[in-house]
Image (cartoon, rainbow, N blue to C red):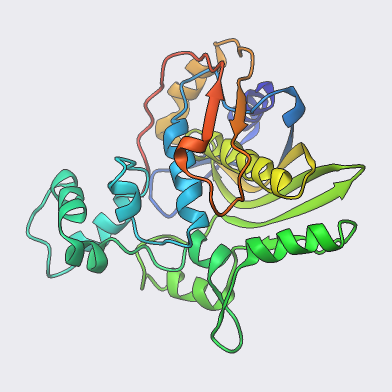
Length: 297
């Protein structure tokens, strides 16, 4: 995972000061690319402990087409909780509940979860339930699977998260989540191998990027298995790659650490639509201690 550390070092040394939506302040670069060879191991950062369980549950949640945090809350995955909580706090329904009390209500009260746990048209909706011209849902993941099997040499194996109509709703603040950061991803098939390139318009290098690398590499492995191909390169292309000012010291600490051997990821031989959490096994993961980074909402 030296590629990730090189990105961190590059932004700390060359990033420009830039204000941001959260008011925290960042160092930012525009335009950067990393390449990870999955034949060398599963690219899960080893210079800090990464929350693999949360990454896997989140990806399975996306693939269910779900956009409500209840699925994650029920599995004690907290990575999306702050966004609907902030929306709830701004509403007349708010009764001074803490984040923990809000999450407990999501877990125990289905009506409350339906009302306040919804994030809006985020990844699950765009990947699995994109609204077509007739209003019928379009499953982009299934479409790309069918295309890869039928016409592997096509240059149209693309899944888009940037739905212009839905993005306007997100920008106007009518939903709790921000506009999607993972704009689109494309597959490339050649000589029995398959690569994936993700274009990410906005990237939180400390918190988000290690998750993103692992999540999309895992998705590439799942797609490869479904199409009887060998997963090769995950290419990560960034628009605005940034480090929040309150993450500087933690990342400097991480740069002093030496990467360890990458783990392996085993996936049960099932249809992508039948895979569950128990069908994944992370083998040989060794890491340094976690580094705590505050989230900017």
